Image (cartoon, rainbow, N blue to C red; front, side, top):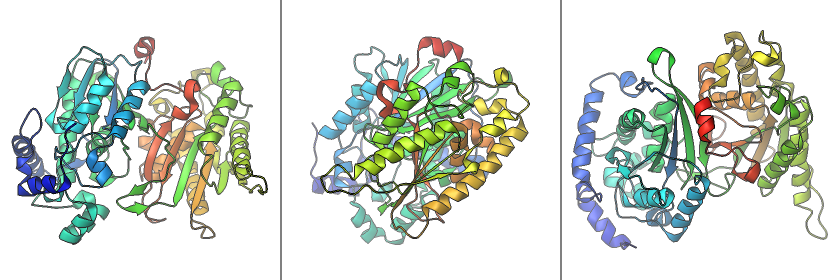
Length: 506
């Protein structure tokens, strides 16, 4: 395994970023090419350069799976890596990559795109395993270029660069160093990558890269600008999935974020953001499966008891949340949501009673009418058999007035949850919200300050959880730790991969 002492690495790094070499090409040439492309984009308006753009049309459905590399030596040291190529995977990083390999072992990937940097190439090799197809190295998939910051410990960056380092932490989209805007350059590179990925003939694509570039790939795919940097979390070896469906009349494809940050470890473990720890969290839990899920195209009958699968899902979710000190559980009054909420509360209340002289703690259960959106769908003009299936983009099949009604009601529900979370009676608080997947899609839209038009850009499965952290208080934007996480369900989960039959039906 390659290794560098911190002192040696810093000396090399501080000479010049251009002294860094990828295994297959010079970063000097890479940066020159990237900067040239970036400057061309800068000649147009910012809205044209960084706003939503049209992607090349596709002829068949395409699934793209993004994976961040495993823990690296510089991750472990707390060094700013950027596009430097000195760090390698730790033993933990190798194990994380193997866990991701197992998560994706049944997927018949047709091609793998990888960053040229050692830590990502090694992760790609572990996940790719014995597949015979060549791994395509794309220099634009390298990590964000951070120039003079690279190689510094975070406290060194703060001491040496002061205001610039502070801007990097709190206003990364406008962060400027050495005459560059790194996040803006990154967004331009991500768009360039998408063109090559989507025009490749493969319909199942693996992409192995880095934290920042994977954030940029997700954001640019669904049309979010540079202000969303650090909002869509990417953990070491976290898996994110994007589905692309052919657009109407050969236009730009419809794009749906199927999963975000399916991690090898627990998605509810404590985390920090730019050095700021969070103590406020909302966990969105989609209720467990009901019998109607099997009988209807759309799981809009949450007012039925859960079936055996739903009961298992609710218990698995309760176990996942066991180590959290949940403050309150808010649920839709529908039966399936109420049953899921009760299962979680029982496990929480028993968690502190595993000793001899313990006293069970009380978890407040609230049923909120604004968390129930199923009646809106039931009142729509569509009959039960005409409702679209719960597939990526399924909300696009409903009338505009139905989507608008769901959006408006979910806005009220979001405000209730935020008020519940920031009740000053508790400095640390975790609020669990249980409801229908459609509700949670809308809630995430409100969290991200989107509009109802984005609701078709997300997908959730029954029994899944999505986690939103608030490191900057009630006035700050929530950080999405994961979306549609189902690994805790084990053999009862919806797999990340899908069969060839599903590919044909999608």
